[in-house]
Image 1: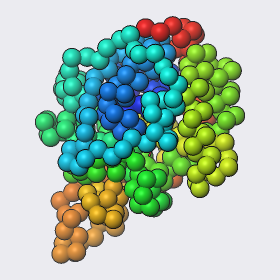
Image 2 (image 1 turned 45 degrees about the vertical axis):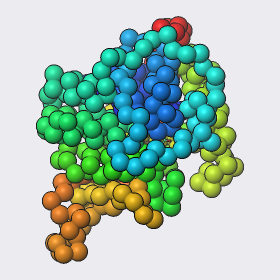
Image 3 (image 1 turned 180 degrees about the horizontal axis):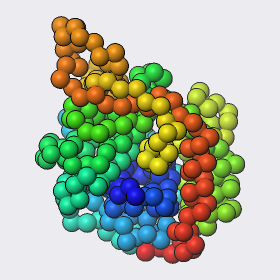
Length: 330
Ligand code: BDR
Ligand code: CA
């Protein structure tokens, strides 16, 4: 069983990942921690609460996290991808439930220390909360079961700049801090998530056969897939990348992923801001590789068996016990 804290910025694909986390029989969702990213942290926290209510799981705790990146100014929210409300402009009613009286970093530190070796952190937004947590408690990397991050673009173009992926460029300092600690860390970035396309056929099947959860995934995906179908990656096709749920699928379908490893840096400013730079050849010229010296090796996914991951996602939501509840809010 994977006891998971999901650090998230809901976010349309984040809501799909939350559905997956609630539905997979080998995942026990301990809580959601929220961060700015796809919208302000006020909006992403409200969305986390509302999404749990829609999935009839308002019992899952939500802890609000960072409103701003560690060092740089917050970038404008990508409302052209996720809508001004971060959820495809669905005009959702405000949540009835409330976030806990504890910050995201405190929630993470408390839970990991209560269950050393048992908690998996899965981060699918900017890494600000994770960086804050590890700076407050540097023992976290040795106490988590693992840290899985959705972010970065290694050998493929970024989705925000030619080099940078959204979660990393939203807080490159935090991403670089996270890569400085010796976690059991796997980075699931665009190299693999762009290989995992969810199509309108997938979403229609969920709408028709996965109850209120499937209906919500269909409704919220309209805006996202409209955007994606205009991009050069998917130009014209009614499909979008399964970014965030792929990080969770890594927990339960590990052998579907091929990874490379090495010490990593995330560029903090300039033309390459947000770029993930991995030294996968373990070089020994300190004068040239000073920036990577003393950094732990991290794993970055390069290839994926996309059919396995897609089947895992679809079957998990279709077989979810959650949607038998009929989607009663709260
Ligand atoms: C990542 O950025 C966000 O827009 C998505 O929710 C995902 O976490 C993809 O680059
Ligand atoms: Ca996200």
